[in-house]
Length: 83
Length: 259
Image 1 (tube, chains in turn cyan, blue):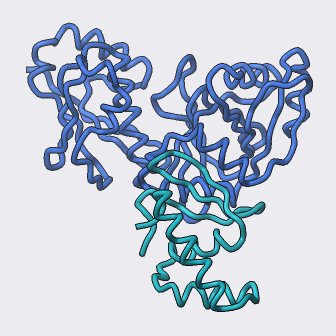
Image 2 (cartoon, rainbow over the protein chains, first blue to last red; image 1 turned 90 degrees about the horizontal axis):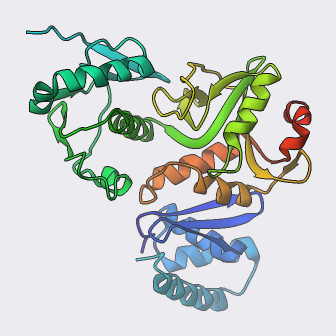
Image 3 (cartoon, chains in turn brown, blue; image 1 turned 90 degrees about the vertical axis):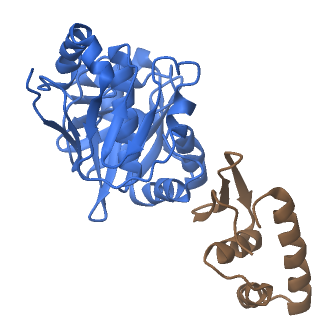
């Protein structure tokens, strides 16, 4: 799993943004969504690893987090940000 | 046979070596070149060379130029990579030459930690002030007003930036200008203002997200190349960027407000 070419994730002073170069659009993400995409940008590929990082940062239930992250990743694929 | 001199254009440490005859001063030479171009029309079309000097490019196609030259492909047949030689064919005006050289500069900067902003710039006491905006908002007008107030005019329409040893440095464009001859200037102290029209002359801090949103509209970038976007983000993180609203009826205030 990795970001589509031309997709850039960045944390700015007021939150996460994702630039989709293919569509030339700037998207805003909340803290969890931005972190997940940033981890992927940094080369983390396994959902388990991503989930661990999210659980550690936000102190949420592991099983629920993994489910939500999987759903989120599917959405991101449909959005054309992930492959 | 006429002897050709070899000239080198340099900006921000990057060079384009050229084989133009009489390449003494950018604007004048190009005009001069145009006259010579007419005189030596036939020889020009046979084979004119741009020598690549110090950059490594992987430019297999002319997509960028095609994109820029939509509807104008008649005058530029193609620009192709051929070993170390750029071959140019079918020019018909000085504007086209200027434009092509500008495109080469942009590409050169992209591949060498650089960015190109759509903006004007002035300088005072070693600090450069860059005004970024879409066409028609008043970039050139603000630069002219500030020139009248003692600022040094740097560039009218395009600003070149390059990161050298982890610092951003700025220069006027060597070729891409509307009215002024570009001024050679380098320095690491500069402020960027995202220019818009207002009722008064005011500056305000804007969020980084808004900075990115506005800057991306005024940066010459290849959206499909991640590093160019990363470079804009790096610029936002390292340079003072704020919004400047201007009402030119209060032009005396502009210089005071930006300092």
